[in-house]
Length: 247
Image (cartoon, rainbow, N blue to C red; front, side):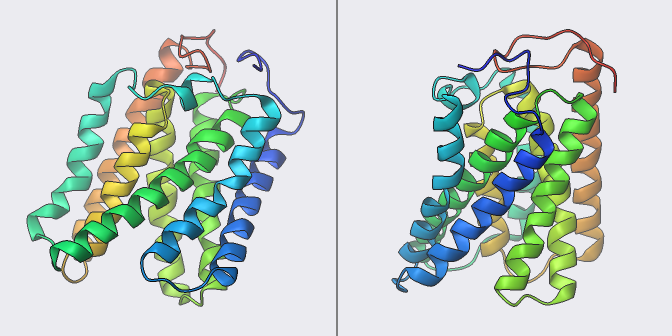
């Protein structure tokens, strides 16, 4: 196992960018190669994309690292505000038959696992030598910019891509901040899946003011979480406070 006190690579940011691009390339290859088989197709596509972060895990022998091997998070109460903000959209309800909602839940779970594995898992582990502020900002930004690749390949409009980049960057920043405290990525994968499922099955579009308030709330909470880490010492691979680092 790689020591949590030193970076596993000499150029961690370049390595994180490589993982980001590699995951998307694997996703695109699977999307165009696999046959269309209903909702199971996208599930297989997202599962196939896991080959990239899992290859990095194998390379650095991270199988037993707490962020991957631990199911129950440290400081689980810190997840509650994020879940509450995400679940506020449930006040509008969800639409669709039970079978479609169940299929959507399975799909979004595959998305949450795949994206958290490469982003808050491998990318964040590669960048762990950075200060809490730089780490969380870079993870959020790289996660958001990755949606430009998806938008271009799948023919999304510039307006939609801009919204996705903003939303994904904020959400990625909050998840990265939470990971500093929880260590485990699995409750983050569930949070990610719940957010996507609610957004996909709620009726209509959210009002602009609602979406703006939600993004502000998530950003504020992420900032508070990072400030706590910056003050008490960043959480490393072992889940124990490390020596304080300069921002």
